[in-house]
Length: 86
Image (tube, rainbow, N blue to C red; front, side, top):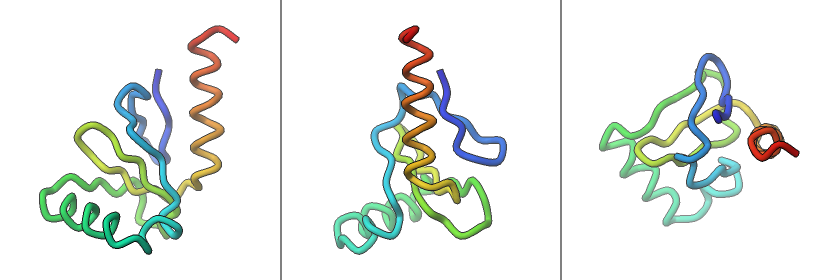
């Protein structure tokens, strides 16, 4: 199953390591360093040119999206619920 991140971008839920609120997490030095490392190594993909609200860390790529963390969480839970048949 896939999680829609905005625009025409979806990722396999099995590849997702975490979904983060960009405002709350980027104040942490380690997270800033991680995102900087990903940027330098071409691992960042901007889903939209709009103001970023969250980012999704996947196996090979970090997706920066204008979709809120809460919306992504709801979509994730709905997808997992559909997958499990509940």
